[in-house]
Amino acid sequence: MIFGFGGLILGYLLISAVFAATALVTRLDDPQVRAVSFIVTIFWQASFASVVLLLALQRGATLRALGFRKPERWSPLPIIIVVSYGSLLGYGILIELLKQLGIDVGWFEGGNQIDIMKDDSVFPLPVMLLILGFAVSIVAPLAEELFFRGLVYRALSETWSPFLAIFVSGLLFGAFHLNLGVLIPFTILGMLLAWGFRASGSIWVPIITHFTINSVTLTVTVIGVLN
Image 1 (cartoon, one colour):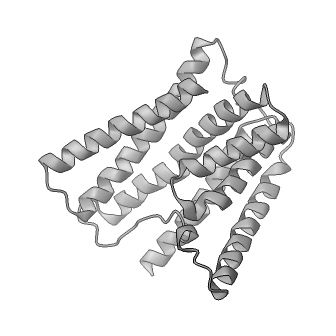
Image 2 (cartoon, rainbow, N blue to C red):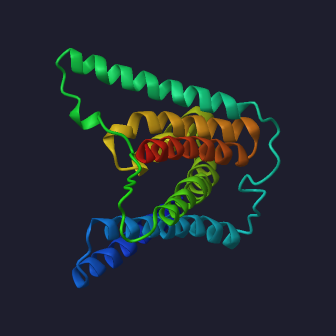
Image 3 (cartoon, helix red, strand yellow):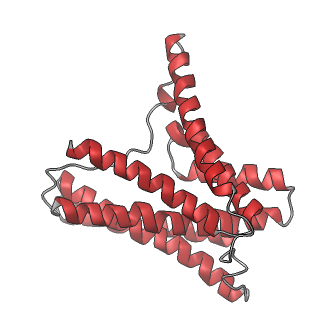
């Protein structure tokens, strides 16, 4: 797990360095920054997913050992989706109530918005949406589930109690998004995904759940932009 996080951080630092160097050499406008960030995100996520696969290969672990097997049950999937959206709604209501009481919750406002602009001059809108859809709906669910459930949760569950492994892996998943506004709801989501992995015996359940949530979010965002 230590090597896994080391690979994640190293990949982030290397890609950030390349991006910073590019920005220094070439003056990038906002559309170009967005286009580069989409592509950088894909490579970054692919990089830490590759670290998990390399570590598994080095230890002689198979894809089946990582959770790529037929689920024992599919029932956790709809439960995770319903509870996830319920927790997001409840979190939003709580934040609004705290604001009405005069409590400063600025640090905990704002989500992980998907940045889409119709007047992007780098790619035609359909191309940009294809790239974004690939990153958000395909690469992110595969890479993040492979890392946080296939590596982190499995590693923690070997020595810790199921609840503690689920909680800590969920907390790390929430912190991974580097946004206090989503730390609590994403921690809950991470815990639900880890529970789904444990309850189903397959990583396909959290992957498909993650794909569904990301795809719905992307679709709603695109519809809002186009309208």
